[in-house]
Length: 170
Image (cartoon, rainbow, N blue to C red; front, side, top):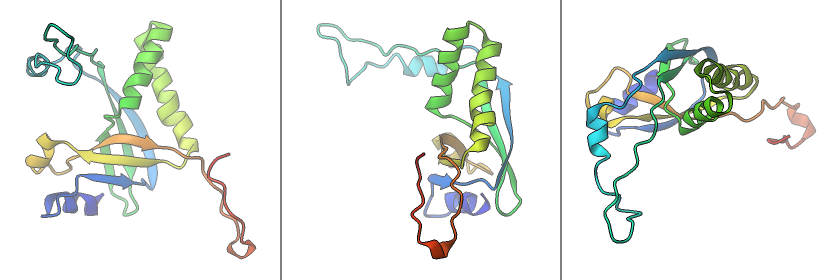
């Protein structure tokens, strides 16, 4: 993480990366605002340029806000501990799907935790990291957020002298 942060602040301005944590320490959930801030609502009043409805101007539909923030706390290969917010489309869709199916925020949060903690701990986790313009421009101490999680199965190493092709998918 330290090298990524330095690279994000030098002239190369690294803003996207694939990162493999040495060890996941926790999956954390915090309550968040239940409504969009007015500044976000104002941006959504702009016309939709890509799918205009014939004969009238259409405004983009305001999507429902997730009233929680999700984080991973992890350790990198140098022993540095970081806590990054997960701003992945997939985690939001999982939350809404579970909320719709169970009609309970507590159950929906538990289902998200079951996947992003219980299930993912059994996988070979890699994180797609990205910076946000707001934090990158301010030269935040760590401008990265998790924008995606890649979770292939763990592959058992075969002895190198056997010449066996490893299988990625089961």
